[in-house]
Image (tube, rainbow, N blue to C red):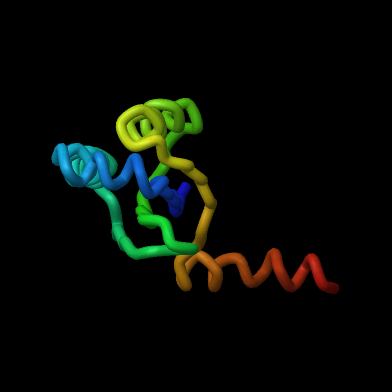
Length: 100
């Protein structure tokens, strides 16, 4: 299942992680490990935030994916199932049945 993981890092924890080098190390490691389809980073509501899109094979993987962000960065982590445009197009028959 394609997942968009949102990682939001508190300012103080992010500042400390930038200074000690752990922020980039944790993020790079997880992006590579997940074989991310895409990864985007910016500020949302004044907080460092990343969006990492990857394939989640089994929900039992969630703790192992999230824990490094919790432990090293004090982050908030959200897992959001998402579709590509091709996935949405493939869902059209189900959508049409639902609205009929």
